[in-house]
Image 1 (tube, rainbow, N blue to C red):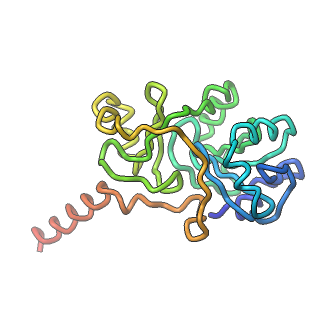
Image 2 (tube, helix red, strand yellow; image 1 turned 180 degrees about the vertical axis):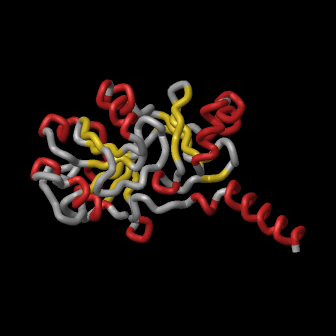
Length: 219
């Protein structure tokens, strides 16, 4: 689902229309798409993206004051998992960003303390510390876990569960890869908000090999 499709998902009424992250103008289709700290933003025209990338936090602060919707999170902010939003998916809007939830109780928890779940660390690692797989961008991640002030993106839900269970075992493996979070303009061919990339990770490859080996043994 692209950001264009999310316009219809997020537009239950006029105030929910998506707006340019730079100018605050509403748009039907984003001219540019920008990902930052796990949230996808759009612009009304070519050129706005460059300005917002140069100073993203300042641009977002202005949007919050205008009380307009400018972004949609790629992840469930409570569980940290990638979220495949549909028209009936539970959601909440906080500080100009719409968040979707896999479960109703997660929305309840979020609404009780949204600041807790939206406080994204300034440092991040786009490399799965469990499977040692490189993650090309936010859209290619299967989820994230925040540990000691750093957001670690993982390749799949299984790895997310493992890092939650024993973070110390994995985070040290990618300590040299910690970097400051920065906005990135999404290229046209990668402009799919919920494009699943789990099949590229080692987890899926191991499952596939195990299945093939089992078929051979049972033949």
